[in-house]
Length: 289
Image 1 (tube, rainbow, N blue to C red):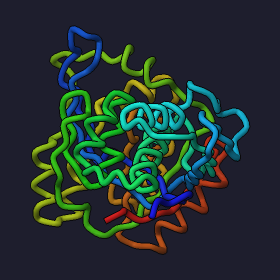
Image 2: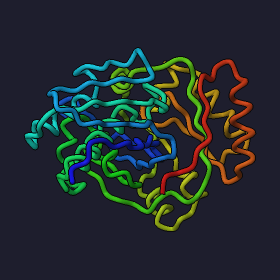
Image 3: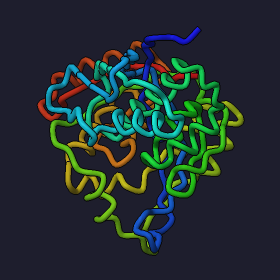
Image 4: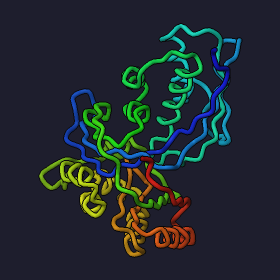
């Protein structure tokens, strides 16, 4: 029996390690990253309609609801690929901060693809959806996969890894922001670039060594974004001074995450950060394993 509606959780991601190897001739950057989902999510509701077309409503009025939105693009891609009848009414409850380096738009698109696959009983495997989702954006295949993973190429070549050991994550986003495009355009790769040890990070994950994971954390883009948003450095240092094993910016930022092995210390740090004038958002979450 074909379903008529479904509600899904679209989980955010952080980068435990992010290295940029080179800029390619097509303008994209070759990356090597460790991706990890966390228990911060948007809620996506899909309802089948007899009428053709797609509608999208959100709790954030400034988000586009037309063809510029990745959710609408994902729906259109699935309906066109599988020649599906009718249309879709979509509702988004946005909890992942926008433009935060946590793949919020990509994970919403991935949820739409998963949801359509289930509503219409297409029974497609994840690998097939991941290949299809690549056309929507480099992070979409990972958000469909939803595992700890090594991401290579432009982010679409994925290898599953053991999950990060149990810990608590504090997230903090400054009021200021920087676009991904600007950050990558400002990146200079030369002999002075400090590249994170992605292989060392993978070894620590294999050994389930949380301290080893934290010691290998690194993000080539962090220094670039810090020049545009100095609050990134302030938040990172605040977390480390308040109990984090390590702290780092995720993606192109400006969100910073700190890893804690003490839940109480994590909560105290989050509460203190809320009082700082340079912090707009804080969350305390766990890893998705």
